[in-house]
Length: 77
Image 1 (cartoon, rainbow, N blue to C red):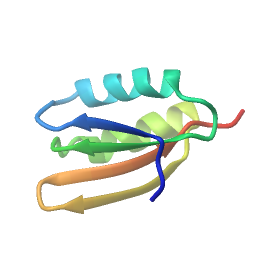
Image 2 (image 1 turned 30 degrees about the horizontal axis):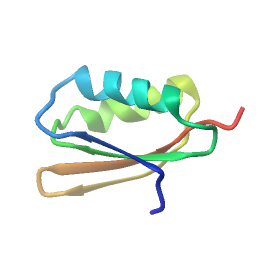
Image 3 (image 1 turned 120 degrees about the vertical axis):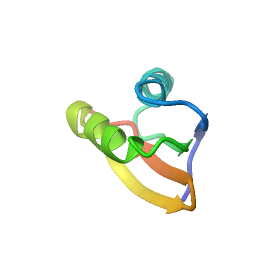
C-alpha cells in the first residue's frame, strides 16, 4: 500500500508505539499515510482505538509472524 511516512516501533511496548504514532500524524498533511511496523501485540487493540478516537482512517492491518503492520491515513478534515 502506498505511504508517505514510515514508523518503526519494533521492540517498543505500550504506550510508546501509539505515542510515537501521535507525533508522526501531527506532522503529516491531511490525506497522507503512515506505515507502522510493530512487535507489541497490544498494538492490535491500541492502534485501532487511536484511529477511532481521533478519526484517522485505519486503511489496513496485517500480521507476519511476530511483526504487525498498520497503514493509517491522517483525516482530511
